[in-house]
Length: 434
Image (cartoon, rainbow, N blue to C red; front, side):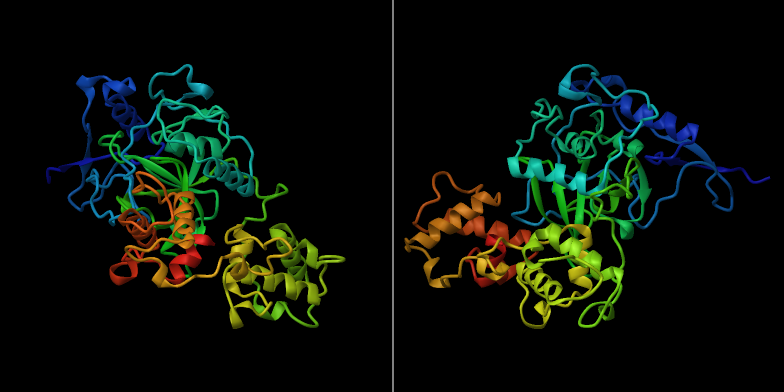
């Protein structure tokens, strides 16, 4: 008889078997003292499972291509592009009720009862903290009662009854493949080896490119809540992030237009078409600021109102020519059904391109120059969260702080080399003011 080998494993974050559940409790017990843990228990504690001679694991959960939660412990700062920071290495609070009173550490797993909500409601709540630029803190609580760290932010957006942490959020979700992500889902990395190092969670806001390699991430990190284009799944430890969908999602409730629906095809739209897709298109356009184009409707019959509203939405994205012909294509449809992209501007701003101030020219942004365009640029950088290098100002005088802030913004777009030299060009200007 062949003697079995032994192999160490880290339990899957959402595996219900008793072995994995016990090991998760053990890992939680190893939290640092400042999180209520026992220092003597701190460190990675792993279970031993039998592996047959054929290599079949008798216990544990196998990883998947979407990113297994038992990847090696992260190396802070590894692979992070310059100017993107900061790293999500901030410590987080522990499970507890709203406003910080009560629990002092991770608790034994309980069966959570999720509150019903919709994708639209999740994103709306996430946007409120972005607008308010809620400062990051693991010990403070915002006016709505939720802790001001990454897991508190998701607890708020998912409308949970209390403040959770990265080690408990998965209990409120169902694991999904990254390819199935929709707005309101989350990408979660809980570092079992040391939860205080690198654990982080972001809210998925929609794809930003057709290859699905970048997405809009809503997240709570230093210095404050932000919304920005992020590579799938994150700047660091990307392979370790796992996608989850909230269990209390109610796709049938009013306001759930963000539920993805495949593009029905261009043939369903245009002159002489009459079908339910035209009605839904019009309804979504009205919700995004296009109501003024419709004297009646929307209804199943395609009219010039549908064409003009669609064109206004396309132009609001900065599209021109054939990309803004008033007939919805796959990209237009995806932005509408996921609730992403720019809304149609109010009357007086006929298109997104007119809403952006005209680029004055590269010559205004050079050492020694002083003008109102530099001042306007600096204020917009601060508004977008890229003012870290200003010790004073911004003001009309171009300085190295302006250049470094512009460079950080350019690198956040995924640009490198000459495309991220810190001097604004037409595309940098358009994206910054969009």
